[in-house]
Length: 348
Image (cartoon, rainbow, N blue to C red; front, top):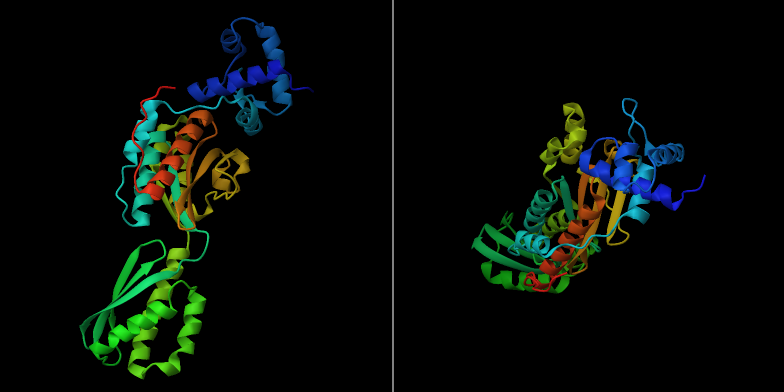
């Protein structure tokens, strides 16, 4: 059976009406949308064909039709009109991303809340390095002869510190030598290489200094390995409660629990700037009745991030994709320049 231009036009009307109303769409409504150019009888025949072809579904209790995941996919790929953000929307996104460049995890957490609030769906956001995190610089700050503070700047400019209790008394005057050793041998290398180099210098360092060096490297390795793991922040799970698809409390609770407890299973595509996954295209069973839109952004220093929203398959894909793309572009500018450009005065 051929998917004619008229069938595509009818499918587009069904998808867009269902997005707006969350109610099955009947032939009379479609005829009105099409300006009376096609009779209701012809539309009913076309709707039956679209059901047979798998693009539409008919709920048992209604004469109307709703899109299937296959229908949404065709709509997104071929029929959806790409949206451009308005000046007002662009300004609202820019205002929501006026964030101080603090620690990376704090910035992405605030950005995730902003996305969820603006798009009105649960959001998730992550940042990850394309390469393993390394140390950029070390400092040792003596407290007394039995303790000191180790300070480490990581490759993404985050600074971590911790008080170390020394197993052997260390002469404070020897600490600058140890700091020089740390910065010359243990920066810019992987954690495996750090441990190997620690063994290589064992015989060159007095025992009391080697114990402090070992403690420092052990702390650095733990911090760097934790930082190299992908951290995922979710926000706005309660947005689901506003949607007719999640009036069933058990259904809403199941998805909200997934977003809270199984967020590592959220889609993390690494191909292209934007990805739309519809219904069963999502691997996780908890997402089989939802759609996920994910956009990537660039952090710099060989790092990238992903920001996504989770919503019903009935979501307004064109609007969500445009707004999420706007946020991704804004985050790229934020991390690249540590500021967002001023509002443009030109009109569309």
